[in-house]
Length: 74
Image: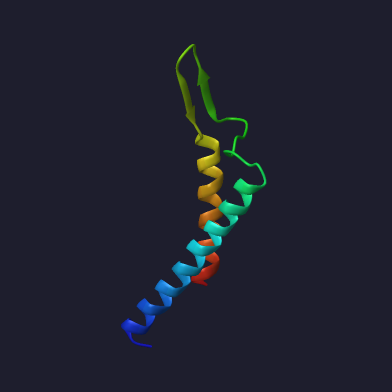
């Protein structure tokens, strides 16, 4: 397989992954889902100021993506 075929295969799989994530996001928003709020996320609400930093959600998402990418590399 030459490098052009490898690049084409990578782009096709990347497109499928982006499509799948988009469809899941659309379906989740239609079911009334908002943001992923898990214990450990930083949420500060004052009178006219709101700050939300999803640190634990980012860590969980990073772990999931790492596992998925490691499965594709093998």
